[in-house]
Each structure stands twice: as structure tokens, then as C-alpha cells.
Length: 92
Image (cartoon, rainbow, N blue to C red; front, top):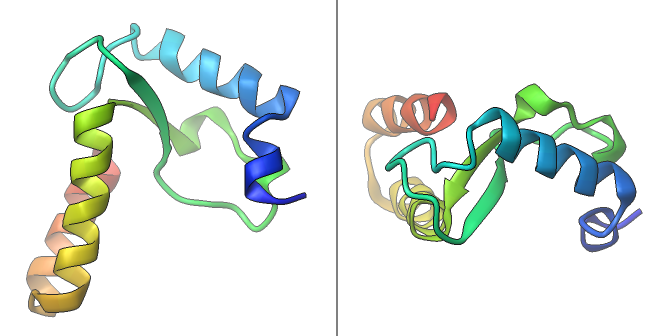
């Protein structure tokens, strides 16, 4: 199953709703409640194996900002600093 198809599956719909409920329908970075996304902290080999603990609720701004920071840092920042930022992003 493609990732795009998985995002329309009953499994994803149930998990993403559960993640938002668990996180109090708030962004776990800035505490906003507007335009919430559910972000994979990491991906499993099969999308269907995703678990609630793999997910975090982020507002649209924090979600896109986090992905942009990951792309920039992987392209330009020193390894140790990158590792610290990766750890921080995964914790959130």
C-alpha cells in the first residue's frame, strides 16, 4: 500500500484521531489548537504497523517548520549539532 493510500485507510484515521485525543487536541510544541497534523516521529517498515507511540500532534506551522529545519540541517549543519536537533525533534 502506498503512503498516500495509507493516509486514507481506516487504520490511519483511527490512529491519527487517537493521537490528537491523547495530546488534548493541542500542538505538542507550541500548544496551539489550529490546523493540527499528526506527525510520524519515525516510520516502520510497513505503514500498517504504525503505533500510537510513533505519532505526535503538531500544528501546521510547527509541522512544516520542523520538516524544513530537518532538510536545512541535513544539508548544512555539523554532525553533532544535527544529532542534538534530531533528538529534540523526535522528543517533541
